[in-house]
Length: 81
Image 1: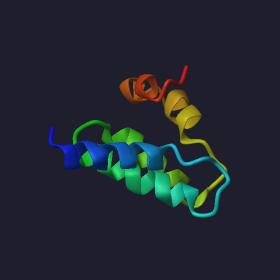
Image 2: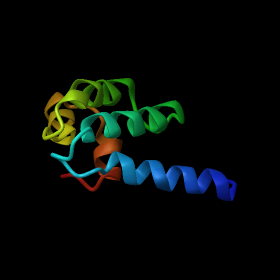
Image 3: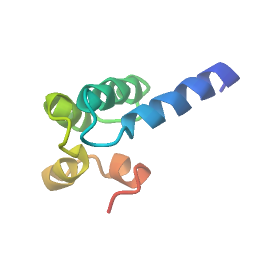
């Protein structure tokens, strides 16, 4: 991976981890999730949860992903139990 691609991935990783409750944070997390989906690093089902949560800045998508029973690789990557 090139330095530029690594920097982009690192930036998107920070964005997908934007703290809950910040204005526009749900949309920020969704946009970053789309980046990882397009790279094949996230399932469509997981991306859908981020889409649902996009307008809900205080809603953590990770418990919803877990409750739906999908996205186990993503949850592991996020360090979510």
